[in-house]
Length: 404
Image (cartoon, rainbow, N blue to C red; front, top):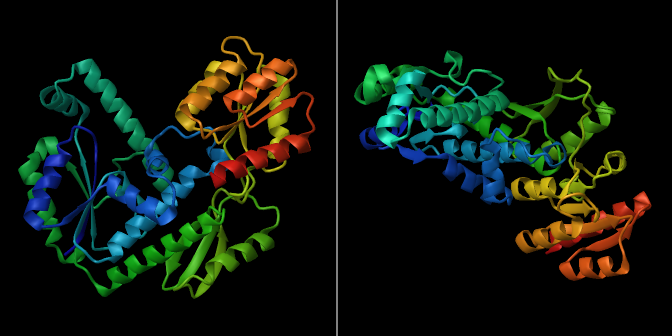
């Protein structure tokens, strides 16, 4: 039997439709949470980091860590593995948009309704006020719009061309919606065929290659056709031949790969430069200093050494980043307006003890040094600091973090 993929808007009775389909067809339900768990097991990334991929808010460190891209690659592999197992699946949620291969026996369904009917559903089923319902709907639709744009390129998450069926559930009702989907399942067009099985294997191989590449620090688009792999390079490359050789060395030994070819994607001529991710170096470094020109320059000098960093200018902002984005290493000034560096250090080591903190100050005393080290600072450095000394200290702090 065919597999069913359902993507839906909030307050569109999708849960009721899914439940009825499970009862009527005996399909096995696969949710976002299931594939997050699978992807975590495959990759070694923690589930929380993978689940963040669905959020429209991208970490300030993502430019360097590429955590979102890595999570998406492993989620796609997890989905491909489930499809390749050959069970009758009903996949529901964000992950349905990760099907980048045209597989004819996968019935892609969108369940949606007009905003007013969704608001009424929220009022009746959830007991929300109209103002609350509108706000929740806007947030949910923003999340799905950003996600669909990131993984498909479409600016409209409900666009007809993304699905085999778009069902306005408020007009059809749950019963008729279920009946329409079951009727379409009986259509010979969505039967499992040798060609559709091959498409699943192509999707699986492409996802496997992409995950191997991302684990080695490369983020490129991958397509597969009967073992022939095409890698799309979407950023300007300084040494194309060297990159192609690196990618071939990783991809060619993978079981099932017969050939590796390249093409330049639509973003190749943009100004951004392709950079390989180096997981031996810290990519989530937070610089905290109220001397704006100094800290901006410091960040640029670290980036030249492939040490990715983000910058904030006060203690309160630093604590917000720690809460939301969890840096690996923090370089912290002591004397700042508002919450000073010692208080930031105290709170960070209390609430996020795994974050390594390097104190870098031009105004500290011997007592400050003693206090900071007693609070758990990794190192205490004075301005001006030699950039090579700071870089080496950063790497030592990250090594300690990785080995802990």
